[in-house]
Image 1 (cartoon, rainbow, N blue to C red):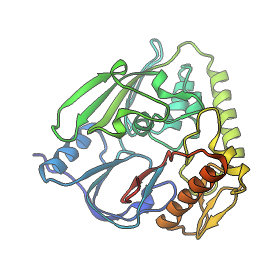
Image 2 (image 1 turned 60 degrees about the vertical axis):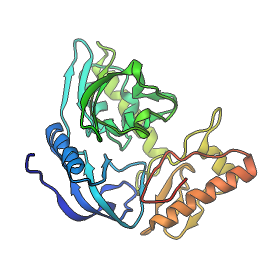
Image 3 (image 1 turned 60 degrees about the horizontal axis):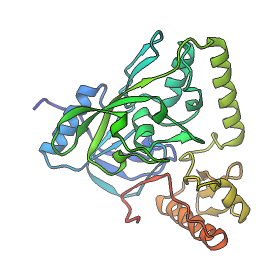
Length: 296
């Protein structure tokens, strides 16, 4: 087995967008898919639990010592774009805003909405993240994965992946996304595409709390409704527990207002769920992924 590089006892609060999290026993940031695969093999060989994080958005990590290996994919940045055919091959660690800008500059349509979303491609496909009814599922051709148990590596076409709203099977199985193939509409007007992405980003920054640490959206929108609207209607906008606060700009955002603790954020999530269920009869399902909690 190849020699691998990792650090020990690293604070994960530096690797989440809400700036909360305990420490990792072992931590690594692979520069490419080959190092990524070697790290997963190392964890498997040494019987270490292996958890994958991307940009750390939509991620709440408990303030505890997490045994095993934590891999952050953000340095896996390879992108290959064919502007003639509209085909894109991308590592799982590429950030969504990076993809959005490169698509626009190459005259490719369909990725404008990804601007301003603080996540990676791998994370977005795994969570089937999106904006409204838009997601990368529409543009996906296939994903390359590694089975974290058998260490088999293979490609899965989109037709074999059962996507649902804000869900993919990768949330429940042992498959880790290494890279993806996507396809976008060609021959777009570059100036218009750049203008559109700029306007989308301007709208997001004016209505969402980009100036404070947050997850992005906390809850999945219920069918025919909006989580933020429900939370605002029951009067919770601006409500705080410790350093965690429901944003006064957008009620489906929790912000780290002043050194929030992981348990305060989880308590705030639970309070929102309870109050909305009591007053609206709707259970809000978190979009946020929990690590290190006994969360149902």
